[in-house]
Length: 320
Image (cartoon, rainbow, N blue to C red):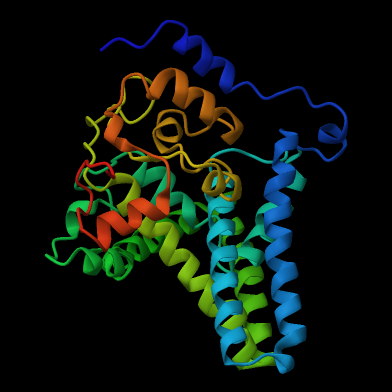
């Protein structure tokens, strides 16, 4: 089916960075909207500091609540890492480098290691066998088992791909290799320091929520691609890409805190596009052509329907 009139021009315009004026210019930012990105990352650090300070005044219930809140914050920061690996936040190369290393510290894991498994693999081979995150790996009859075991199922392959990439970049002594080293020192340095200061606080407030955040960002692939169509090999971006290759979650709350990561088809079509352009691209280019059953308003309702009750796990259904 041919794209609607005007969509090609929209896609081209969407990749042009806005003028660097006002605060956007003196902060070296490509888009002033990324103040939200910085705010979400800062909020995670502030919450961790608050819970650390109040730990002795908390009880078992508040411990659990604090860990849950930190898990949500860790997931939101993981989506900031996802965005940062696709679209630069700062136009000044030194500031961008410092930002990536600082992001690793807040994320808890090396940001640059996201590149080989996501940018160079998942985006190129979406739902094909080469995709280390392809959802056909999950074959359990119980839907919840597929949800809970997605991360441990895909992680060995993801880890091998990361290690291969690091060895390859080390042989070349590339910038990416040194970025991974800097990211590792900063990310693991913060984690180890907190565990050394107080292993109980470090585990509950920092390390465990960070691991669960990584689990969640990888498991999002099951929600966003389960039951969708694989791409045609070699057509993994642009308007020739399979339009039903992803499920979209278009609710305002999830898209505020993840900076529009719910508009997943638009992201796959133009992954270098700034996230502020995704809603318009979704409405004008994706929605008129896609299977309407792949447009979900609420991610929590879909999660319940797909993996709890009635357990449709990726089938293209809509809530009654």
